[in-house]
Image (cartoon, rainbow, N blue to C red; front, side, top):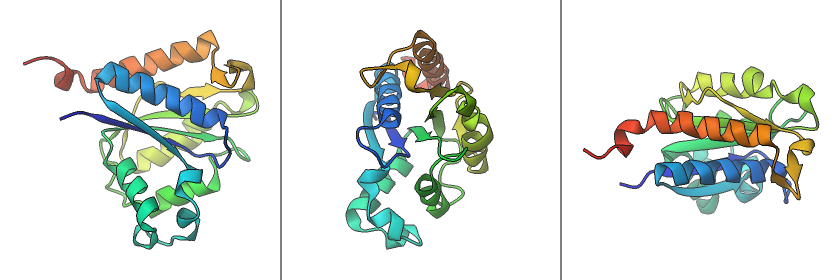
Length: 181
């Protein structure tokens, strides 16, 4: 069975540095694991997500995307920093998710923001959110500011090193599935 890596960018903007970062991490993770990769952002879930009071309220297209996200073997999540935290609609999506739905799921945390002062959003906002779900968050989080991008692509050596470290840690979670019997 092929592993599935799904990226979710908590951005409503296109183009989006957050989505670009999430896509890069998801594609590198998938390549390392021999998995498939797909990435979505909040725009893909609109307008259904914003109108939903439960997952049952989602239209079929939005519901199918959310089902894909929740059934992934690996999640790569990211959000732009907005007023010191992840975006509200990103949080709304996870407010609809059953608390047991992400238990033990491997998750790589990413975020983007206007400057280095927002880098702790991963540790102070995203990691506790996924801790609530008992997800297996990868120790290395990846934060990028505008200075880390060239032509809207993550390019700084520090960010690329963190991506490699996180992907290595992720591969460790799946070592038993990647080693031939």
